[in-house]
Image 1 (tube, rainbow, N blue to C red):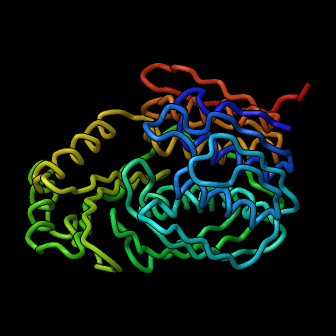
Image 2: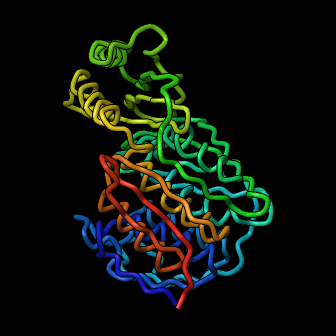
Length: 348
């Protein structure tokens, strides 16, 4: 049994999600204590409980401690089963974090799967739908699996009600790692605003502010299709396409925050990434670590990527991966870049 301390490193929900994902993939039972110990409200919140229940459904697991507020969980997986699944969060919690929990197991299953999810689609402290669709899914496909994502309805805090569909096709012959050391030449850049249920001039003001700061105009400033279920919401996004990778940045509107401030926050993130030359940003680095770890484990070949920042989130994620897989990460500084290198090792 793998035992994890939920207070280690960044001490949040990622330890739980990565632990569940790798428990399913390896078939190794998991016990995790002090779940989300570093958060203001420790223990399982609704979206974390949804991750546990989804993982149990996909793997036929036996679970102890699957209840709201629980800080200790025992998870004993069975065989992963491909199929059609529906998972819902009865709140605005991120349904995309639920998808990321079950995705590794379904990518390595023996048949395709379809997953329908409902809940939040554009949340603070979680990857928005467009990040997964434009930045993350292409890397999954590059490793040999296929992930197709469809946004049916947007879901914003506090109403939720978003709907997402994911079609997952496992990689024939297993996942294959690759090096991602440079982003390559720029191909396209644009801003997009979702503002369902809000006055149209809010989206226009945000886009105009981004355009003025970045020198973007015309087709680079887009009002997104309004696919919304309940309640108002606002997500301002910037997409940067390069030869080797696509990055997506998101700034969420909130009550009392001006359209111009929403735009300013986005511009700060975009400019910081453009000022460097690493292949991926901090958030994509965190997501890529698990993909690379699985691919290195399956293939036996090493891989590396460069990133603009090594967050505590990424370091913690790498540490959890190393507990389950015969893979070791080296986090190094190479000139002006940070490199994450993964290699397979013999297990004791």
